[in-house]
Image (cartoon, rainbow, N blue to C red; front, side, top):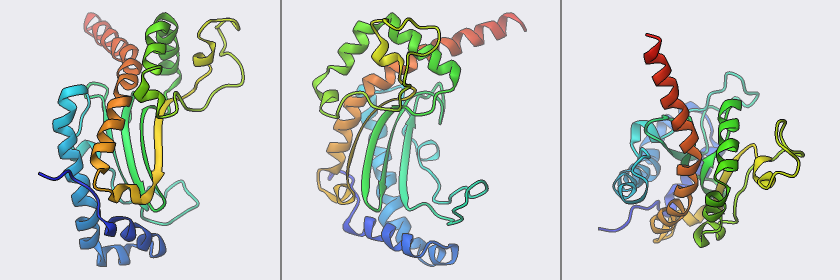
Length: 236
């Protein structure tokens, strides 16, 4: 069976959508969207569901959870264009749930393909828990970052503070990690990368390289969730 992939019509449709971003045009061309974008994305998510069992069984790959709707939320945006000009999928931890904790993600847009993993917008409690976890397990965290496959992605990325966060010593040995507000690894490629015959193999290899970071970041969040559940049971 050939690997699932997008075609040369996939990115072409996104570019047409960018030029004709209105509901009527999209509805008139919905069959093209379904054929050239949604169908290959569903095939990729379905294959990942099988492949995750070997290296990230804790992650969900399911269309209902993973796929993003094509419609933009314009309620709080000055840009009222109704449709997204990319197609994207997220793969969260099955216990923490969608858009919570660390996960894997990829998108195909008009000018790029982005494949990444980690945690993008942790709340203050999650960020504190992750920093504590890194400080307590620095050697293991650094070994993860030094893995050749992860280093080929460019190492740990994400926004950082300009100084050590409050409550931590300036000379703490994990300072270069504690200043992170985001903990990410990713690669960005041109849009036609999605049309390559080896796209799925490249996607899978990248996700395998990122999965250890995702698992590490979720460890303290899962532990905290378990403690919260125990406390709730005790107070019932």
